[in-house]
Picture 1 (spheres, rainbow, N blue to C red):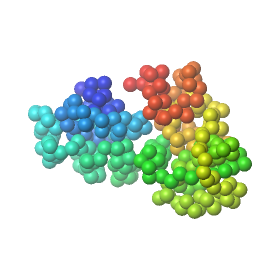
Picture 2: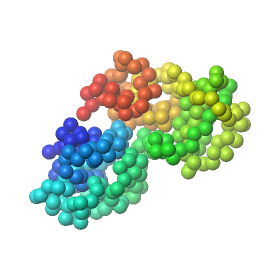
Picture 3: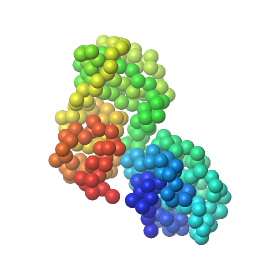
Length: 304
């Protein structure tokens, strides 16, 4: 038996098994780790609101679907659920908690409790990959930068450039740059940069920009161009739902003759290869927020 948001919105967009023993059996067969979610009574409005932030990001959901065995156990039910609660010494009154277990039931990392945001869940999932010494998919590795932007932990800076088409790609190669956007401030061509300060110095970024004759842009309101990521916008990648970091990497890879598809998730690859989105009413789906764009893509492709 499985449950999902179609049954209970507090469980997000993940398709959860309901039987812990079955989940462990599947984990032993596939040698995938188990994501065990202890959740509160179904219908809790507070928990519904929380889960809609951290259990619905499409690329987190896709990573869990591809690389984990997810199982949900209710804290307020008797029988097997209560037995699972005792087995891991989890308190019934505690906030919803997520455990990350080997196929033998051993913890891989500390449980996740008390934090209900995509970045927290992402960091736990990344910790599982690291502790198991497994390579993360590139699309999931890139997602960290997008979540830093969403959480307000990135640095934003704008540079005036002679041509933002080239500026988007050249600045995308600087270590620490998460995403670039071409646009305008007061009629001047501008590249907006989102930067991860933990991966480099903003002063190094500014020095590289100066070497390319880009100057810091001050004042004025940045307006993104109608077709940012110029090189991407000329290909069928434009029909895909993409994160900001994916857009930036793909836009860089095309003119530099790298392989853009390496940055896509399995669903994104499937949509691109079968052309199912190319008759979309939105010919530039990539410019939309990925959650909204993914919903459009999923309906068109009948994604479960």
